[in-house]
Image (tube, rainbow, N blue to C red; front, side):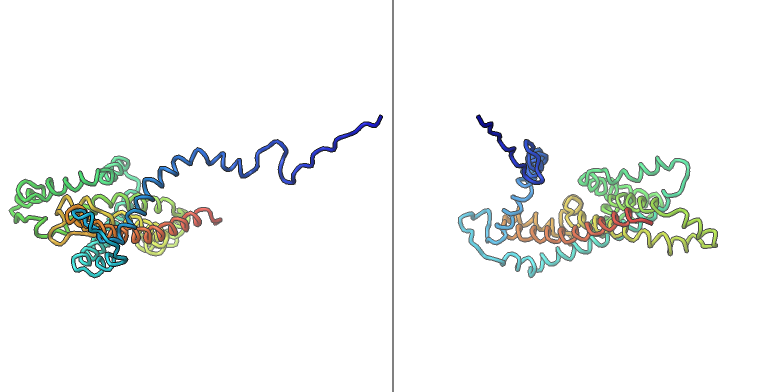
Amino acid sequence: MTATTTAPLAATPGRTVGQPSARLRAWATRAPLLPALVFMIAVTQLPFVATLVISFFDWNALYPKARRFTGLDNYRQVLTDADLRHSVWTTVLLTAAVVLASLVLGLALALLLDRRFRGRGVVRTLLIAPFLVVPVAAALLWKHVLYNPEYGLFNGLLHYVGGPQPDWVSRTPLLAVEASLVWQWTPFMMLILLAGLQSRDQQQIEAARVDGASDWQIFRHLTLPHLRRYLELGALLGSIYIVQNFDAVFTITSGGLGTANLPYTVYQSFYQAHENGLASAAGVLVVIGSIVIATFALRVVSSLFREEVSPA
């Protein structure tokens, strides 16, 4: 009798018998994230796709059966209409003024908090507080507590010294909106720049002091070049948020007196004129502008991380 032997199964190279493949293990680890991914797509991407589709239609909500496909006419109207062009210019002017003023004030406050003094923690907390206020509440605070011509704090102080009693919102509407936004966004810039100041090479600064460099020379030749990336990051992140600001314009001036920016114009087109297609086209342009700014912001963040991990 001859005994028959069964040859062992040849194992597949790179794979252990009885164990799942690498692709299956990867899907098993990613599966718990799928509900969150589906939810994010349903909440963010699908509405944007719907907005993009509506932007190609002449669609008035009061006459839903009269809608028709118009291609790029809505975008052409957004870019050529005088009121819409003015809102784009107002958006650029508002964003640039708020970002620049917030950066300058934030840098000054960051330089102050970088020094050691008694009560620095309390001062830091108080300076951060405006950024934590709800945007609508901050705008209401400025409109009623500070700007009101009858009982506002500004006119109260002017009355105490015998000064005039101006109506701040009526006389300087855009400046009134910008001041409230600067007050709210200066702490954000301060935090970013303070992180940059605390990451400086202290040995290099001490060596410069030993060589006889003044505080201004150290700031100009060492501190400011070191803060360049942080200044760029603060400007880009601030621009992303401020270009989409709606709360301050709506609350303080209701878009009047030449303060209507592009987000407020989108609101007017959609909720007041019921022009869904035109409002969607303007909204898409706002999103595209935000994406462009965000792309530069991500590059700056990536360069910061590369500089942090690079060997000295």
